Image (cartoon, rainbow, N blue to C red; front, side, top):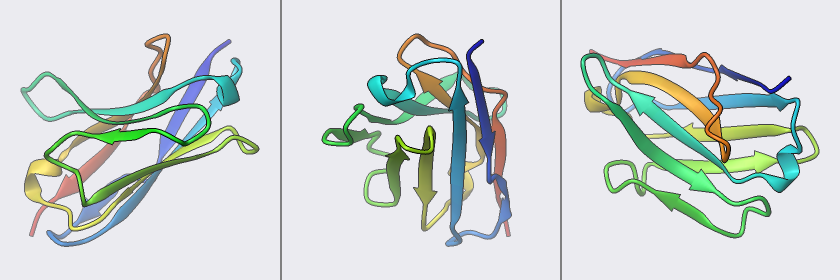
Amino acid sequence: QVQLVESGGGSVQPGGSLRLSCAASGFAFRTYSMKWVRQAPGKGVEWVSSINPYSTTKSYAPSVKGRFTISRDNAKNTLYLQMNSLKPDDTAVYYCENQDGRRGQGTQVTVSS
């Protein structure tokens, strides 16, 4: 069955960095476009970034562009999100999602001084 397992979240101070990972199994990861989405407390789900199967097309929400970098390793069936210059507004549960809309359980990111 499809499994997406996020990791790498945590608590950091503003300006800090985190790298999220998403281990995928149960589907042909290397042929799927993938995305990161997030949900802040009391808010709806927000799209963060997307990447196509060959990493030739990447897109970012305006709120994270220039600070976050999406990448993938198809040999390892893993999706990444490098997050730099973190802000308190980045506090949320981060989910990876495949093009079928399947998500993992999420990983919490908290940015606070």
